[in-house]
Image 1 (cartoon, rainbow, N blue to C red):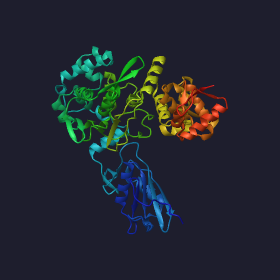
Image 2: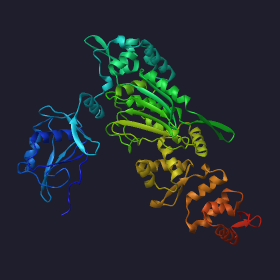
Image 3: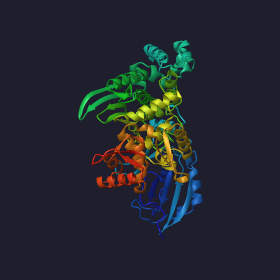
Length: 549
């Protein structure tokens, strides 16, 4: 009989020996730890090495055990228990993830699961700061909105309030806020709240407008670092503690100083292309402050290296957000009040889709995409690689946006970029590679075809797409365009004629470059097209030119 249980323990799988009857309190601890993490399955009757030794007779009644666990957890955890028939019977206890908050044993123990350095799981206590993080991840707590009872308005820096007002003007924030007095402004943004007729700052209030010494006292986790590394040499290494608005300005100034620009020739016009798009950089910096976990020690870090630019912050992706759905997940943050204030000031994207701006900053120049793959459960890390812009792609996107009078939507930019990398893709392939729905990709493709940005080939399920020839103006690029359509030997003549239609003359070398064939093969193909009266030789010899009949 094939084994039906996993071979080893993971974060969501736990084995427990039940030869001597596993202790009730330990069982409750395990269930609570699972519920406070990602849920999972507990197998009673399996040793740590995965060998099956069987469940104790006192644990052989799944219905009774499920009720017993519910009666000893707060709030009650509804597990599903069942006996699995293996070499010896094993009790499988499936524990759901606790989305409604934190759970504990009836004796008051709160635990969570984590992986040890040897890649085996363990249960550890969940401390108060971790409880706040967990509730924030589940969108049950806004840590930034918590009132600091020990703080007073004396902890607010008037200069930071003035900075806030100036930024509202500079970034087209909510102008109505400028009509309010300082205290009314603090209350309107949620930076201060009344408790017992006394106005106390919130975490967001101290972070945004607090004095530096007050930030160090009440939110000691708020630290920032900027680094520039050239090879193994450190050119700049600055650690600082500042109110959020001042810190954003300082990081932005640093980034601007290390962000060279490149002039792109667009026909008669020139366009300046920064190494890292300015709007994308601002969104990356603002996101780091908006979404970081202020209950955890650590620092927001921006590092400029030979390979690119990294912006990292403590706190992993919030519940429901993964690397796969970054661009499609419903926008929500870890610190809603702080994020809302940054939007109202005008610094953050008001739709909550700042990540779209970050991707757009690379796509409009045909550059390599931003990379979040270094992110972990404890840190979000964004890497924007250095790469040369694709001049022709940049030009076409700029022209299309000028024609429409608005920016191209992100799905359109993503599809064009993917077709640049993987020509002759169908809707299913595009949807899979971009983690978008087929319905959305089909809509975008149809729009791109109508706009002349994409060409369609074939029909039905075999219908596929390539970039339009308008993206390939000079001869090398036209060769690239024709090659992307097909390299099927049966279509060699058609491909050569396509190339001839795009150029006044073609040569044997052009055919070699197009089809990656030997010189004699190229000559044979051209000779056959001449004999079919489809091409006309302009001159003779090894360097002969040909044109359409």
